Length: 127
Image (cartoon, rainbow, N blue to C red):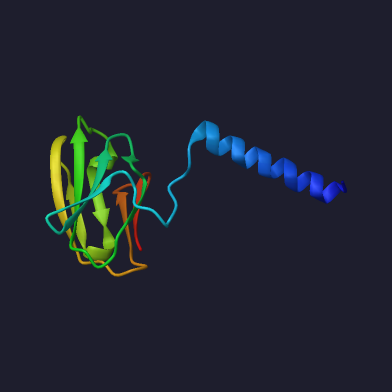
C-alpha cells in the first residue's frame, strides 16, 4: 500500500470514529431536530440563553414558517435579538417565548439571528 492510500484510509477511519462517538453533524439535507410542522405551519425553535441553541437549523422551503425564541432566565445579550433580513430587533422576555413570523421562505434562503453585540448568532437554512 502506498503512502497516499494509507493516509486516505487513516483519515476515513478518523472521520468514521468521530461520527460514531460524537454524532452526525446536522447537514443541509435533513431537517434539524428543533423543526416541526403542525397544521401546515413549520415551527423552528431556538433557545436564547448564553448564546443560541440550536445554532444551525435546516428547514423546508415553501412552507409558512414561524420562529419560536424560548428564554429561561436569559440575562445576557442573547436576549437582545436582531434578524436583519426581516427588520426584526427586540429584547426578548427574560423567561418566556416570542413567536416571529418568517413568512414563506424560498429554497436557499438564509435567516440569521444575532445578539445586539454580535457575540452570538444562529442560522436557519431553507432547502
